[in-house]
Image (tube, rainbow, N blue to C red):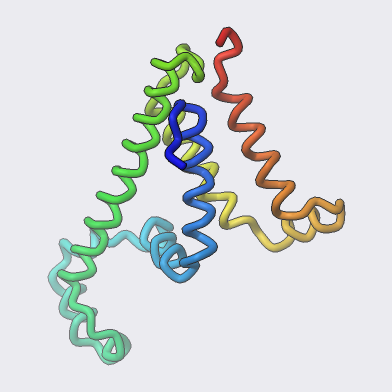
Length: 159
């Protein structure tokens, strides 16, 4: 069903990301590698000898991707990430306009915060999962609690 209010759209964003992460874990793993800061692709792109080493080096010969295409992938991932924040910002703005979301929040800041929260939930360390399990908190209960937290964080109490 199509989400109508801003709050419904915000929760829908979290659920859509969760569903995507569970349905396509390999895509999510690749996406997370590009945004991990483990390596700085932008500085490597500007270094000619690194391009050559990556494209021609034996160590990378089993990966026939040229560096230019990696740069294209990075640009596409960056564009998609920006689009995610825009979609969420629009959902928050919709909520402010329809009265379901507090009007005193900064739309962009909250969109980025919620994006970070949503992404990091999917990357929960194994020991945290074990702690929840020991306390009898299953994944469904935990995600319900997250939704409650998000709703409490955003909801306009005067509406």
